[in-house]
Image (cartoon, rainbow, N blue to C red):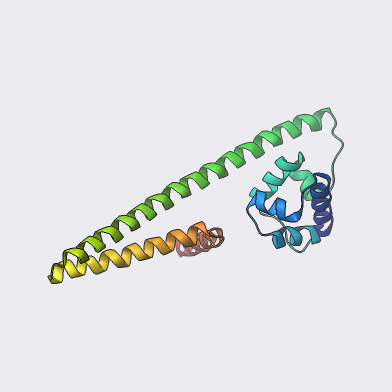
Amino acid sequence: MNQEKIGAFLKQLRTDSGKTQEQLAERLGVNHRTVSRWETGRTMPDFTLLIELGRLYGVTVDELLEGERKEATASEKEEKAMEKKMVEKIADYTEKEKQMLTRRLNRLLCLGTALLALSALLQYMEWESPLWNAVEGFGQGVAFGLLVLGVLMTSRLGPKLLAAKRGIFKNIRRR
């Protein structure tokens, strides 16, 4: 796999489509410097982004990884159609994963907001009891933690944090 050839092909596809690096980056949800790194061959897009790039430019993932368009014979056309279906299934799965993560984050943020409101209410009531003070402090701490987690997961750090979490759990399972 020649990364420089792939990068040049990605650049050609982008310029042929009339998009700037910034426009493509915005469409894919990445930084424009990331697109630049792909096009210079320094890095490669993630597999899910390769699928999206293939859809966007009307090429297969295989063509992207080869760094050139291929002439299709009859059997290759059938293979291309099968690959397209497979890619669509993977993209649908990825979309469902994103939706599931979004629902989880929404629940966490709602729970954090509710706990913050509860602790504010307890503080407003000014009940001077060690139990209520503990509940108030616990609610504020958990609410703050959930809100910070929600912000981190919805930022660009989210995929990196998820990958790190998966790596940690893989290591734990191996032991």
